[in-house]
Length: 145
Image 1 (cartoon, helix red, strand yellow):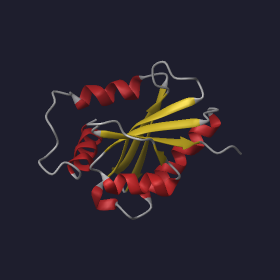
Image 2 (cartoon, helix red, strand yellow):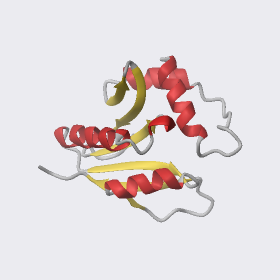
Image 3 (spheres, one colour):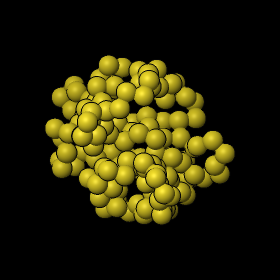
Image 4 (tube, helix red, strand yellow):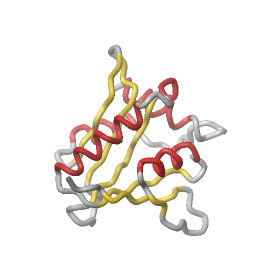
């Protein structure tokens, strides 16, 4: 579990210039919950025995059954631009398609231009942000087979 939280923290720290906000979230408990949820999935990428990428997704509360939300998607910064994110995204899409998902959603920090560019290259489209939003909602049409 420590590897999961460490990767999550390292990746998030890259888009918070003043450091990751300490909002009281117990990320160890949060990740434990994500791993234990019967209605969710967590995918990981391991290289040479080290966790270098992970994604967490499930149907959000009140959403249609064919909708999935990508709650977490992180690649270790030392492995950016090496295809890890693309491979992890492809694995997510494969799972969504197999589960009959048609739409995927995510929220990305408004200051995280690098991630927004990555998601756009994967086919995600941004929705108009509201005033004062700290996150940009993006939508992805899961391709059929």
